[in-house]
Length: 141
Length: 112
Image 1 (spheres, each protein chain N blue to C red):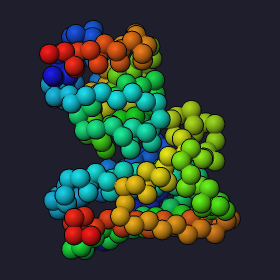
Image 2 (image 1 turned 90 degrees about the vertical axis):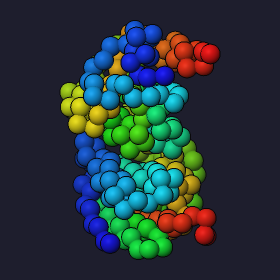
Image 3 (image 1 turned 135 degrees about the horizontal axis):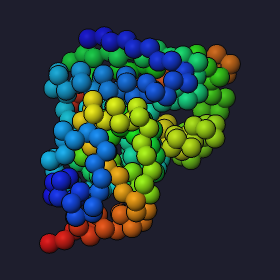
Image 4 (image 1 turned 30 degrees about the horizontal axis):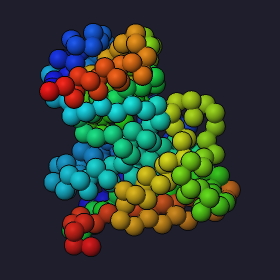
């Protein structure tokens, strides 16, 4: 099963809509509740990152019998130092974004913690792509 | 304990999302950082916060939280109210501050 969603950068009114739509799909196809919750958390954080930092983004969700692969690709400023960005508490979010309770520097670490595999590639000035894989039977891996 | 019991005991005002008001509460979570709540709150928790924008409802819904308590008499935005009615997330309000309402909720939930 393949699903594609688009995200508009800067549009906080719709932040979480993709995660919400995917949550419903995962419930419909009876994905393990615990794993489903992890996927939704990781996807929500990825979605918010696009809204908070990028101009636009595309989310591709690819579900097969073994795993759920999510690819979030954005057009945006990119990340020059991924290792630094991964540090909990480090954030480049604007004061306005922080006032709303976003930009706490916990997004990427939440994504890492809630995925079985995560890979970030980024070209500064062009954009960032985050790949997340969650295995459907976590015990088997 | 049900949300309705908590509303009565803590003298909370129901702003919206009335349809889920009889749901069971598993505990509470206090934070104004959305990533903290997304990462750490548990299903069925009541979330106490100063945030009033509609992303609060999005987070509560994604995490299957029982309800949100907005403190210090702060008014939720109109789209927050609208969204909470669609997502069936009760938005409750108190004049009390976070420290005091959290203390009272803790006491209530841990009372034998």
